Length: 333
Ligand SMILES: [Zn+2]
Ligand SMILES: [Zn+2]
Ligand SMILES: [Zn+2]
Image (cartoon, rainbow, N blue to C red):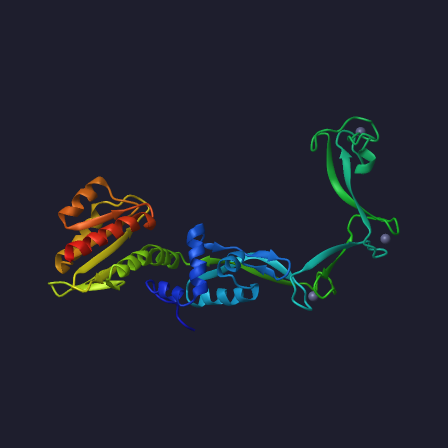
């Protein structure tokens, strides 16, 4: 057994297969962390999210799911019962109701009604007047409210071949694929799972791929050699990790951290970064804040030499990042 990767390496596991990248991009975009199976008339149960995002055949879906589980990116959970043909394994089973006397499948089903007040019982056809309204065939009163005036007490099946009536037809199953008849005893009871995506893997992917990667691309375009995550050894001898560390031709160092939160970020995020900045003293320090900073945190950042870029999504900060980088080049040259 391969042990699943520890947190922090999910991203590289996903990046090892372009189909997984497409799938995770799709999941982040749709805000999904559960993949539900759906019945496909041709292939049986499959996962439309995987087929759609990875552009694969239903056959390949199984391989992708196995890979997701093996890499620790998700797990399966019981979702629903699936009946299968014992001969060919097809999930395409249809049900037949037969007359137990002559085996005919030409049956007519009728509800049995009871007029509650006088207890008169009969098939629904006997309760219908020519206009189609329900009337008691015995006392003639109008029956309007189900449960109060009348109730359904059962069902009858009339065979249209031998004209006998039964309350329990014989039930058989037919495999639509191999066309063989199967009894209830013969049917294979199997199950289909839903796929629960590992939340930590999804978060790591979202952060790395959708937030950090676009920043890396901008830095590279501006001529930086980039490491992500990157480390800088401080004056104290301690090495400090940043989400991205870039070095340009002249040896100027840019350190970038990305802070993503559901709520507005407060001063603590600035202070945490400042501890690293104080020791490592990069040429430029940038903190990308999604969705943004509190007023106090925004005022604090420049005092500590930290440039902040705020936006509700990473695309909001790309333009300010670009102009910041071009100014940076202008200052340095
Ligand atoms: Zn009546
Ligand atoms: Zn019959
Ligand atoms: Zn079959």
